[in-house]
Amino acid sequence: MNSLWQDIRYGARTLWKSPGFTLVAVLALGLGIGANTTIFCAVNALLLHPFSFRDADRLMMVWESVPRVGIEQGSFAPANFLDVRVEATSFESLAAFTGASFNLAGDERPERVEGASVSPQLFTVLDARAARGRTFTAEEEQPGRDPVAVISDGLWRRRFGADAEIVGRVVQINDRPTTIVGVMPEGFDFPRGGAEVWTPFVFDEKTAQARGSHYLRVVGRLKPNVSAQQAGGELATIAQRLAQEYPQTNAERAFNVQSLIEAETRGPRPYLVLSLGAVLFVLLIACANVANLLLLRAASRGREIAIRTALGASRWRIVRQLLTESLMLALAGGALGLLLSVWGVDFIARAMPANFARLVSGWRNLGIDWNVFAFTLLLSLATGVVFGLVPALNASKTNLNESLKEGGRSATEGRGR
Image (spheres, rainbow, N blue to C red):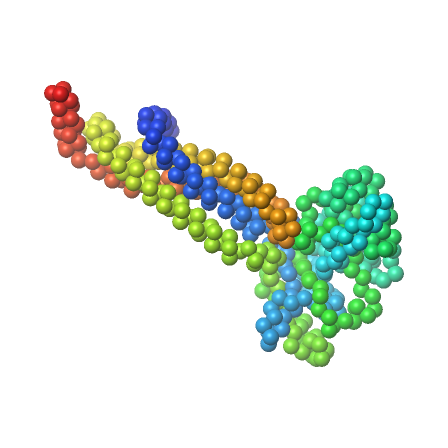
């Protein structure tokens, strides 16, 4: 540990004596690492953690498909959903939802807000609890119940002035007196699209028997230790039974499952992966440039390295010293890159139109978190090794006699002049 601390102190002094070299190297690395960190922020928010739900990897979208015409992710008919909900044992619970727009009236001017009509189990599936009041009960999907609604935190603050007595308040939604029974936590946004009002989907007698109209999306939470493949096999069996029982509507229909994260990120995924590849290439160029600078610098340090070798320093000791300096440059570049990324992410978040951002799952999560910090740290360390190892190994091969002779000639020439 003492020798490592000596390497760090010596490296700091050496880099401080070459401010021009140090500044150029840190700037080059900072730009490359900053670009990678910024893109990784988007990958982390939009692809890896678009939702903050508990055990999000167990959340599955369930689709109807018609392979003959190439439909793989199709919506459900209400009657098919009810059958699957009863028969599927691979899921803790299943819920259906469909997007909807609502006319909200009351004391202020009428307003049209986006939302969803959902089966009451949706909040159970997502393990989402209301910040105020409650979500829906199972009975509220039955016809004849008094209309109720759950609203978003944003709508509660914007429309109702964060009224502490909002739960139980009756408002006009689609010209019907509707009781607000709950307010969701800040940041809850499902389904994507900026939902601000949720109402129970009512399965009346006609709707519960409908198999020809396909407009419901279905999400479910797998039971622990049940795989998506197992659930898919069970759904295939249910689909075969329904095809035999209802050949006119279900003869060519199958059911399949897909991870909720995969389903919601298939749009931005290819673009983000391509962008990440591009910025990694930029970082490799920066590493190559800094490696060339280190090679040139190592050539001017030949006598210094030869003297250390003559005094008993092993080749590994020389390599470790030079790698320590490379890692110090990389960490400084990483710190600069992280700072540039904070500015870059903030700029992207502000520049994105709100109407577009609300359609992208995970956009609210865009920012620097511990995952991004860990990525930047590991990337900086890897970068330091990549651009520092070859110059360090090359410099450690210095010919002792030649370096000392060269140093001696330089000193003699200096005295002669």
